Image (cartoon, helix red, strand yellow):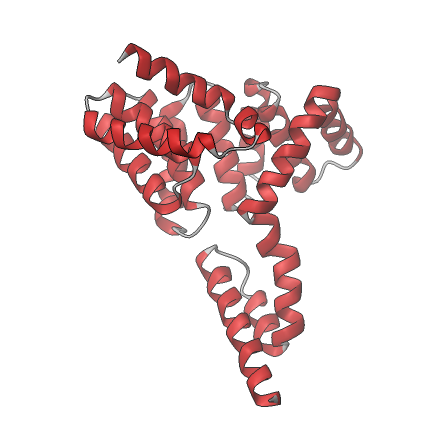
Length: 248
């Protein structure tokens, strides 16, 4: 039985090691995982895997949505204060993200540009955030230039999110075929409501009636089983789809 337990620990450690390699984590994690299979796996799960999981992101989104309603300027205010007190690269990344979420895209772009010149210039999170800021600020071509190398270099890093941002950037640049490829890949990979709606919107705008109908049918079925919170979370996206479907 002890041998069986050790084998299970190694399998779990191997799973997290594959995740670490695919998502571009520091190689020290491999040493930790295989030197201490059980403890290393627990630490990796808590420090890396869970914070970037879909479940954790959904919970964080729920908390952020409630906070924004109660105090819409809090995130930017606290991030700016932290950066003013301790102007580290980490605090600058936090400020850039808060500015982007608040819709202050010009300053968000400036802060992300500064991050791209610092020690985290090659960090996937920074690159994705910078691309989002560029796209939100109307600089879709610049967003593509940031994301294409990232997608090639680290295909395992948030593939759905990277694909969706890249697809939107392609759409903004009028590159319809490339946008469709990204949306199709994102929908096939995750089947999330966001990916399906983006694919349906692209299909409606590009005369892909069969694809649009298939996705709208799937989305309609999913909407029947969504909680009130989930519907509210995606209300803007679903409103866009309803308007596009009615117009088409």
